[in-house]
Image (cartoon, rainbow, N blue to C red):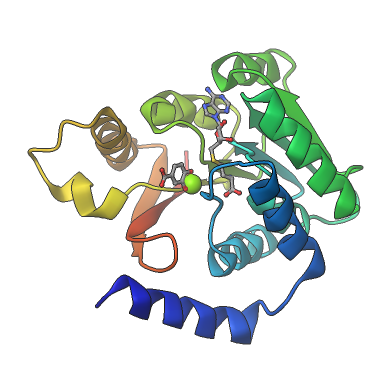
Length: 222
Ligand code: SAH
Ligand code: DHB
Ligand code: MG
């Protein structure tokens, strides 16, 4: 199976289940125009996150890693009228693009962007007792995934769903010889999640326009 085939199939899925969407399409256009890296989740993955948020009846969502707010908009669209989403972004330039895209989506009342290093903004949220969140989406720097998981647990309750993007990395996580820190830290994250008695979890590997990667999903049970 080639990348071309994966892309064809993603286009097929998006044609059936996503379709043209002025707001989301403009979000990607504006992100490209501002030279943000093209690493937002794929459209069908965004729809998947949206469905998870709906399935969990999520009223409060925490996202770690905003970029241009593509995944943010998918998740925020799943919120009820009294819901809220907090998204954490290190790069002020990314946050500026995200803010514009969120406003263009009409979601500014529901979404708060916190600009800064997530290590600090997560500590702030804990300090403010901003949790528990119903759903947490981890998608920032891969080196920090183990720490982000610890904070996510702190900001959770029994029944919270923690989702993490990019936990397969072209399959490199299954290669014992990989010494790329983005791979070794994600492997450490996967092992921590697997051993953590407070969650039940698994990983779904994915292929498509974003290559070969995967989502970890962990349900907080204790
Ligand atoms: N969730 C987005 C993609 C996020 S890309 C989507 O799917 O649409 C990862 C983002 O995490 C980048 O914007 C990057 O600037 C941000 N990031 C990296 N390190 C960070 C840190 N320490 N704290 C907060 N954000 C960080
Ligand atoms: C990459 C992909 C992502 O989805 C992400 O969140 C960060 C980086 C990448 O392919 O480099
Ligand atoms: Mg990602």
